[in-house]
Amino acid sequence: MLQALVLALACGVASEAAGQVCCPTGCVQNNNACVTAGANPRACQAVPCTGGGSSGSGSGSSGSGQTVAQPILPLPGAQACFDLQPTQATINEVTNKCISSLVANAQLIGCLFEDDAGKAEDKRTGLTCAKRQAALARQCATRCAQFAQLVTHKSCSTEGFTDQQWFVAFGDLDGKVVGSARVAGCGPRLKTAISISKSDTLKQKNLPSVRP
Image (tube, rainbow, N blue to C red; front, top):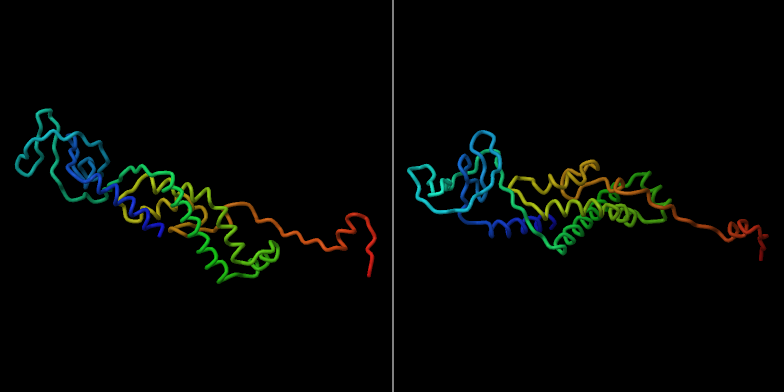
């Protein structure tokens, strides 16, 4: 669902950007953007289209000396990126989906294959495995907000772009694809459950324990 949302955002912007793109001299059109010609294309700024006919198979030249590029096939290694302007509601939605994805994966993997160390943590925290994993995953909220900023403000045609941005936010926690991460590394160790018996309470108050 998270990847679908990001894809929908990208498609919406791409549809608005569709149309004629004019590039300066030395640059050629790549989808809806301009890149330099050559083996290692780099992005360059598009210019206002001022008209002008084409000359043969090359580009047409306007009266101002600007080159009007004709559509060409994407160059190898080139990518088209679009700057997006998301609302805060969209950023929050992606952040929440990120947290939900981490919770679901942590509960599935962490509890399905829970080891003795995990069971010891359940006992120490007084939580079930599912609740403990959910608590750990929710400590990743700051990283999820970072990921949401990355994928909602820019979209690129590169395959695996969303996973690349996920790696920026979670790579140090083995997060290689969307939803994966060692959630235990997102925050501090969970608190130990406190359980004090009646006799322990009396000892702390230096009061005698009265047996019935």
